Amino acid sequence: MKKSILNKSSINFLEKYLNNSAPTGYEWTGQKLWMDYLKPYVDEFITDNYGSAVGVINPKAKYRVVIEGHADEISWYVNFITDDGLIYVIRNGGSDHQIAPSKIVNIHTDKGIVKGVFGWPAIHTRRDGKEQAPSLENIFIDVGCTKKEEVEKLGVHVGCVITYPDTFHILNKDNFVCRALDNRMGGFMIAEVARLLHENKKKLPFGLYITNSVQEEIGLRGAEMITNTIKPNVAIITDVTHDTTTPMIEKKKEGHCEIGKGPVIAYAPAVQHKLREKIIAAAVENKIPFQRNALSRATGTDTDAFAYSNGGVPSALISLPLRYMHTTVEMVRKEDVENVILMIYHTLLKIENNESFSYFD
Picture 1: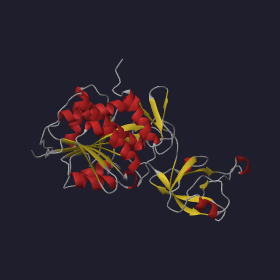
Picture 2: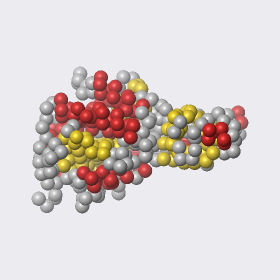
Picture 3: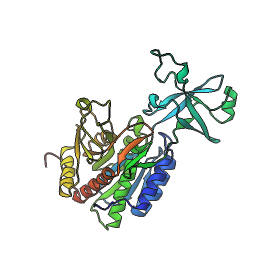
Picture 4: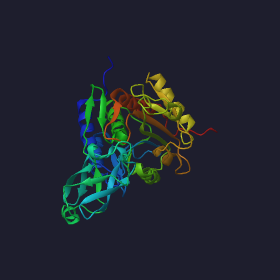
């Protein structure tokens, strides 16, 4: 039986990291947890004004390689408070209105967390055949108040951010379940790469920039900023992708990816061919299973931000297959998590100092 590369300390950090709320624009508490965990394995940190964090190994090296995930989670904003004390919301990222009814929420205020619930009419009061589906226009939060003034007295105002409190747990020994696995798992996996390099006493001939970017969920904004700070020569991005084997997903449209079958290597214009082939070679040499996915015009991940920055940065995307994206029960397989870590780790060991990925060299 293959020995797990994740130790007890790793899992304890993962649970603490996932249970902490870090919505888009408010990532700093999660980033502090991440930096505290990463600190023994890096030489220094870089941070920026919006909260992206980078642990650096060999900061004096001129050749710079990035491994990257993103730190933010989807959430809601308070948008309107009615006279009778109900709260209407807008999205902060790709929050799913269909899963909202009956969910408990945390409203983040200057006075602390205010608990609330997404209310919904009882089944007894809904007419057969004429039921309204949940939408941004009809979902609302109830904090137990009957007047707007009561809500405001709690510290709730327009612009307060709202998250779900659902916490980490493990199903059937090997399945990690939580909200915000997209893409807190990315930050976790790149931190584990740094831990393995340190524990195995691997010396890299280049500077390694372990990058946890903010604001991916609203348009790759953190990656756009931090890549111009780092100015990398190479970037390997990790994010999540859809397991397409569950009901109501059309494989002819979404492709075939499955949890438990290994990391997913992306094919897209932003993915640099020679770098991708180096990743595949590392996987084959080290008997790491992998899947492939075609992504057409854009990857929709921070890969695009890195690839098209600084005159063009050779970039590639390794995705973690995930079920139920943007819900509070996102699910990944432990073995896939370990194999993403190993794939990045072994790829780094194959990259040479000052290696060119130009097609013309």
